[in-house]
Amino acid sequence: MRTLSLSLLGFGNVGRAFARLLLDKSAELRERYAIETKITGVASRRLGWLADADGFDVEKLLAGNFSAGTRCGFIREWLTRSRPDAMFELSSVDALTGQPAINHLRAALEQGVHAITANKGAVVHGYSALRDLAAAKGKRFLFEACVMGGTPVFSLFRETLPASQLLRLRGILNSTTSRILAEMESGATFDAALKIAQDAGIAESDPSADIDGWDAAIKVHALATVLMDAQISINDIAREGIRGISGERVRAAAAAGKRIRLVAHAERRDARVVASVGPEEISPGDPLATGSPSSSIIHFELLDTLHDLIIASGRQGPDTTAYGLLADFLTVARS
Image 1 (cartoon, rainbow, N blue to C red):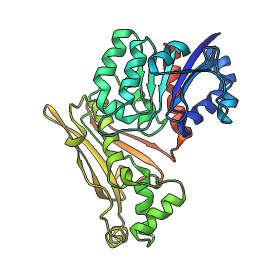
Image 2: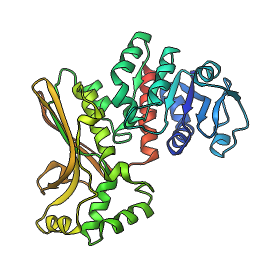
Image 3: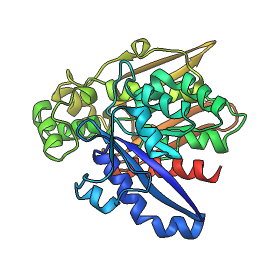
Image 4: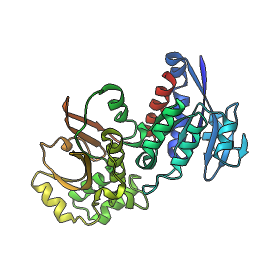
């Protein structure tokens, strides 16, 4: 039986869901993998840097009791005091720089700690450097939770599709816009549809990242960077959101048997990769037409070995993202 120490940088919805999942899966981890876990570090903008090498009481953390532990001044002291085997970087996404997540992950790897993240910005802006640093340190840099929550996308290619080149992908990567467009099909105005999505907890109070296409753009950038070795910046991605789409256009497409959805593309053209995000009409026979408005789906096209591969996931949220973190943790633990 091994006991592995974990530190969580970020203790919002995803961090709490992951802590709860560790509790719920504790017996299974012991029985199937001979692993026990303890959380030795917790940090957030509100909490500061808290460390306890003996392990926090997770139930108390989930109840909002953060009285235990030693308060640290900065991340490197926090890592030294919490002595984790793996750090989970769960801070807010910065689409334009990937910071401070990149610096957090670099600090962990430099101190010999496996680095796992749900932060898309860190993958978009720091993937190559963090991958190479992890390799140099003999540690893992993993990020399954960054796109489609816990749905295996990156690990699928890494573990089960060797010697297979991805030439093109297209997908619906943002379910918030799909829900808004589905409400507009039923007669709602854009503003009314957005309000419905916000009231349901699907759209944020500031929905700009979703409706202006930033969330989909950063996700397709992460996919292209990791799976296609794309050397592009976020500003290279042609981006159009759904803010300007009229209800008349959405309902005209529906009357013709089609649906308008926000679709992301990445395609290899000679020695470069071209990516874009924008609204498209989806015909019934299109692979992207399957699934509900809460689904995400990717059609990997022209794989030089399999030709077509489709991955879809249902409703996503903190629990599915937490599972992606757990899957990466078990990859680390078993290696």
